[in-house]
Image 1 (tube, rainbow, N blue to C red):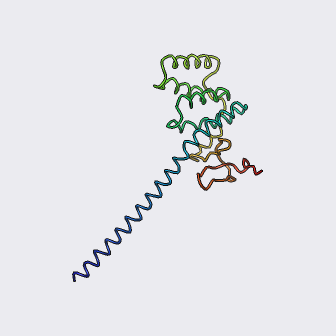
Image 2: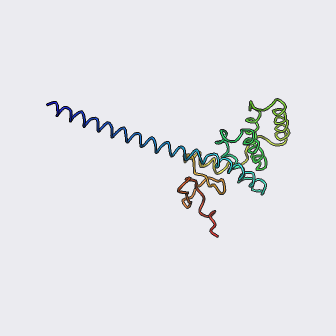
Image 3: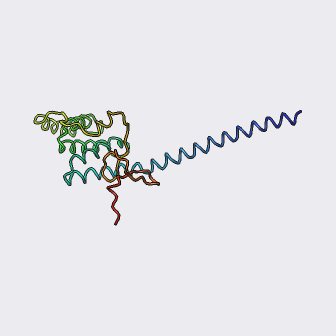
Length: 186
């Protein structure tokens, strides 16, 4: 009788051990996935930061604005003053003065800036918005897509644009995506 009870207890222990092992394995895989994602996050942030600047200086102001908008997700990596200064510059160049105004509001509210720096941003904003209404004249295609309930779209690392087509490539290591037409084979 005692052997039968031990067998039941042993069976329950092995089920519990198996379940626990499964949960631990799942946690390890989840942690590894998060670690891999976090390892690429800093590189991704600075990639988009540099890409937006390059696009702006090459005259692709609308594309630069789309790329700079992604930078808001990286305030934990890139200083907010750098992100919102670039965003304000791209938005102003793209004549998206509503977005530019929001970037200036964010800049003026940063606690890391001195009173003198805040005043400089305030003066610049005043100069811009006395000439231009702080309103975006055209609705971006990204806003239209997001309002349609599509959710967060993958971003092309080559252009900074959201991927809305089915023809794209995804890296098997870092899981970043690029539009098929942006891949050039030499």
